[in-house]
Length: 137
Image (cartoon, rainbow, N blue to C red):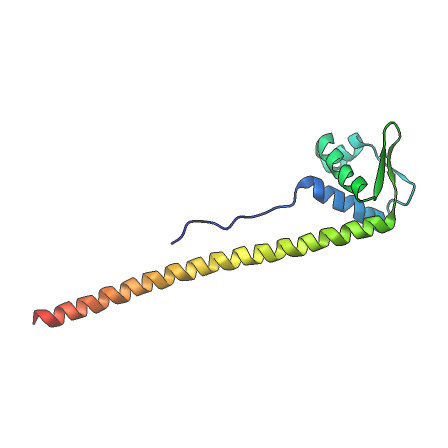
């Protein structure tokens, strides 16, 4: 049986946090112009390092969802940008789900191929034993 496994992919924690923050903005937990908790508070909330939060906020800032203002904090910039960000990441999730289904199918195919190989070997062994017995007599 083929012992090679299909690669598995995961979404980086900072992307999941960015998606969660964008979702909170879209759901109205945070509104345009509102200050979001600081990096340290967010790091504690999500149980990650401040660097992970910085990366999350960078994604959201690049997408226009928030503004990160030194000395002021993180301000919600756009609810519609948050919606667009979530739409983009949901497309990524669809792609990831398809990839996971494909990986599962490849594993199943490899198992079926191994079963076919085993049964073919058994059939050939049986056929050779029958033919050998026939020619001995």
